[in-house]
Image (cartoon, rainbow, N blue to C red):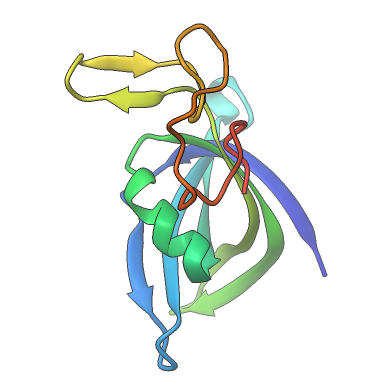
Length: 134
């Protein structure tokens, strides 16, 4: 198994799909900057989260969201192109939650109030702890 950890931004909103067996999965791409100056380029990774975690996280994974992803690294070939893929084992949302009604970002992690103290209103359906990890 080849493990990889990458940090970057989502290139588009996550897409929730089902396998032929009916299992749910969320797929998304992560853009990672490589190099600097004139040598700077962007590497794209196609990422997949299977099961309930993918189904639950898909609505939170929107274009531009900064994430750190760890998982099994591989490649696939299609039309003479090589694609970098990651089967996600761990995903960390970086930064704060989008507060649509206020037009800004809440920098406190899920389950914590603005003072940094745990909140009592976190639901059981959230598949990750207050540090945004799954």
